[in-house]
Length: 448
Picture 1 (cartoon, one colour):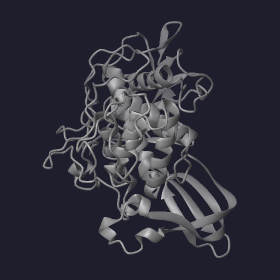
Picture 2 (cartoon, one colour):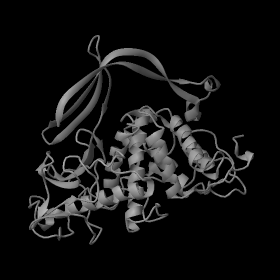
Picture 3 (spheres, rainbow, N blue to C red):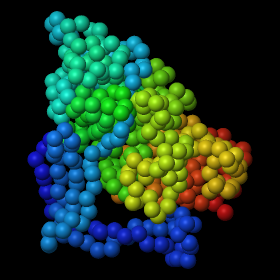
Picture 4 (cartoon, rainbow, N blue to C red):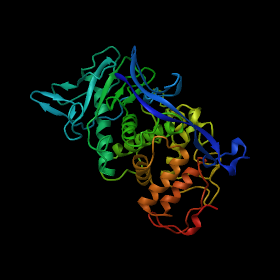
């Protein structure tokens, strides 16, 4: 937790308006490029950041308060969470990097990160509280028992250590995937160490990233198992990367993109870890394209990237109502975009991999692979997105990133356009007939 802070600013109050060409379109037929966000008016206001605690529940908010009369202009939660995620113990024996200090071993990774709270990446024991607690130590360098934490039991014996093992393995693989594949070190790109606190609160069904400490908090679960699965750790660390770069506002469409970026990161890290956590490319397989499958007691995932609507709340495509949804649901269309970009779609209309918005040739778009898709996404999020980027802007910046990486008119750039078209963001285009990936495509790929 931290004392509240306030910053005086001129705040632009936005509104959505249709472009002239879409004035007469029915609401149900609007495309993301048919509308734009414009400034309605400006407010002299304070941006108030509060990072507080009520009982065991963290209350993190950014609030824009009018300096004239004190009314709340905007407010959004800054608790960047995977709500209701739980974890089972599914990785078997895994290598973890620790530090020896005399006869004591500490869960401090000397190979990853510098500075920060502990001088390197670390795992701490919240011990059923809301505080990060002390770093894990042990008399031997063998940790955990591979079983779900028994509520009320010791958090430092073998059973209690298992949550720390999960967290350290996830932290190591996320760090390695970013560094080895993209040359990006830690969350901020400057190799500043972070840490993960486990056993947060009691039977806590949540995991979250805190921008106060630039660290992560992981609960043991109640409806779910321990929340330290590889995709959840990758997800939460992804929030740290976004916070250090684009800093997408955690509300509306930008909030959905923030959550989607973390979901993408979680799946990418899962694929990397399952392939052994080595190499300079993201493997083509190994992940399941579903978030939270392993931590679910009934193996029902929290989110399906290839068909978000399977959860009953997330839309498969953009609409004007997207910005009114919880960010864990408004992330759905972008998750689907990334799946199609990496894996492609299918033409069968009754399947989970079909999009009615793909109207050009071929009916089933081709994917470019997870490695290329992630490189494009990461470049766009860390170098091109701004805090207010929405779906339409994300498409434009993704096309720019693909063109810079693989060439203007390349197969990869065309795939980005098709993947966004598949979620009702921009027009569909034909795929090039003969060009190889990484090469420029014929002029015929332009939208018609």
